[in-house]
Length: 103
Image 1 (cartoon, rainbow, N blue to C red):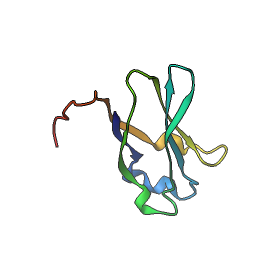
Image 2: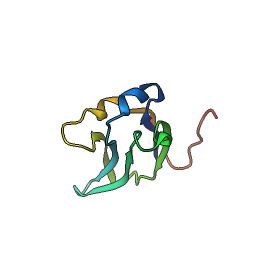
Image 3: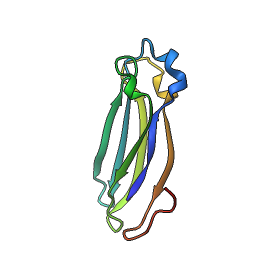
């Protein structure tokens, strides 16, 4: 599985006033060349204060089949730079049956 966190820092709230949000996605590319999109999420901090902060994700992957993981962020509105405010953290790949360390 592939897991970690994504989000928008709460301390950047002043910069969100005119933001249309940030699109966040995780894509899995398998060995046949097919892309399987596992997560698409839009954070819109100007309309929802709950869209600020850190959010966890957990995406199952098929070790023998999947080859590439693509993380991307982009502004929802053309010409926006909200994608610069977003972050990914503590991303990790775990084998099936492996135990996670920590809380």
